[in-house]
Amino acid sequence: QVQLVESGGGLVQAGGSLTLSCTISGRSFSIDEMGWFRQASGKERQFVAAIRWNDSRPRYGDSVKGRFIISRDRAKLKVYLQMNDLTPEDAAVYSCARKPSGRAWTDWGQGTQVTVHT
Image (tube, rainbow, N blue to C red; front, top):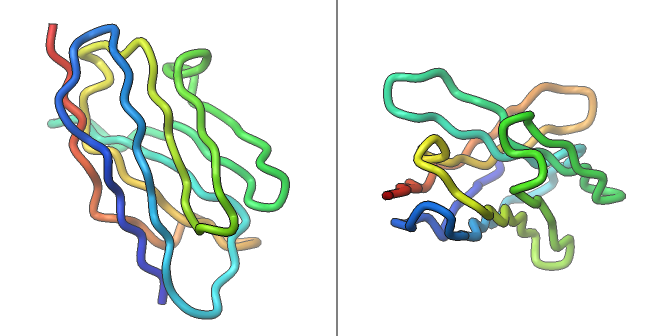
């Protein structure tokens, strides 16, 4: 069983930056990719970014390209999401997720709230 715990959310002014962290724990698990998703109130969950565990290759959703950066620390079992130039449209609950090799996203954290005010 894998546990994912997010941290780093909070209130930020539009144009500001915030960095989220996801801590991974558990026993006997594999990771193909780790990802970040977000869900705003009344909206569907949206893909934000993912990073391939072995070689750190990132990919991003169109709405965050050029503003967000995903990274990971294999030794610490952590994934980060650096969010820059935030807008009110970025406000949501951000969750990290694990994708094992050959499978879909299978494990999810509880999420951390990001609020952006003007």
